[in-house]
Image 1 (cartoon, rainbow, N blue to C red):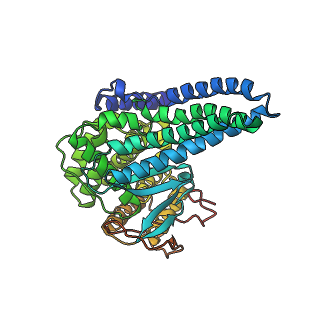
Image 2 (image 1 turned 90 degrees about the horizontal axis):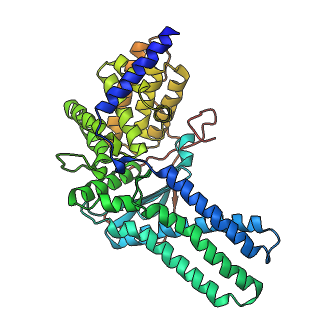
Image 3 (image 1 turned 90 degrees about the vertical axis):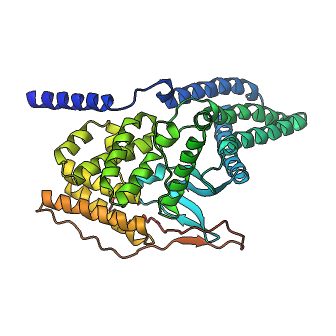
Length: 436
């Protein structure tokens, strides 16, 4: 009992130490995601109740009607929001990087639509649309407004049609009412994106007020380019910043750190990690988890396993859980040291090695892949030293899956960049990290 209390006290002290070494939070650092979701849900319920009284005379199952209206309105809202981002992004110096649906990534490679299957079960919940700047100085303002503009125009057209046909029998009246109430549900998406408050993924309104100066625009664009390169190319693109205390630069610094780590500039990597941990309150949750994972990896790399354990225990439950669920190539080495050195889970290590082997087998070789292989092998060596009795697999694997490519009519492609296969399979049905 006393030992447990001591451990809890140590963990609390570590958490306090961690807070003391980070930038102080301000109003802009408060995450309003759940508050906004609850507020928008209450608005939807209120409108739904009003909607029921309007349509109950015209249809038998008003509840089913309301559910369909809400779902279809939100679906069309998301679709046109995404299309608006793409169209206005193309007009303002951006290309479509990739689209991720249920963990599957869709992007163009040599004029062909390429699909990467989810690498793991944990990736199935991922939905993303990432634009790729043609130039690091591209202005994201029009692109950030693009989704909202498209949704508003689409809904205005639908409401106009509703007014035109509202007197054409019961269907016309029902369609008219549906477009009016449907516009409210669709506008919830716009409202969520435009309210300039901090959310999980930094919404459009927040980015518009936080990416005003030239350096922040460059940092934001470099983050987009590197996110695309995670999927398509593999190489890291870096900028030239002297400080990182802004939202755009805080969410970019991880790529600067990785570049130093890959080039074996360990002093620079440690320096950047210290800066990253200090400005961590400015990061999105995904970036924060990755940075905290790299902190653990650096400590293990330096042979400070006890400090790595204490640091890991000081993280929140959600952060610890995420670090043990690798989704991408770089996540594997971090999950490996967490499972092997901190949690001492032999079976988990074998599954992570298996996943890493699969990703490597399906990935076109380049500098980044080579560096990740070296770092993963180093992590594996450290685990074998700590657990010499563990029989861990070697890093050899044969390709099991080729990219799926869909032929399209020949088009003029944008300037080519060196591209990278990072296809991910889900055929291993006995692996909890892979889709069954």
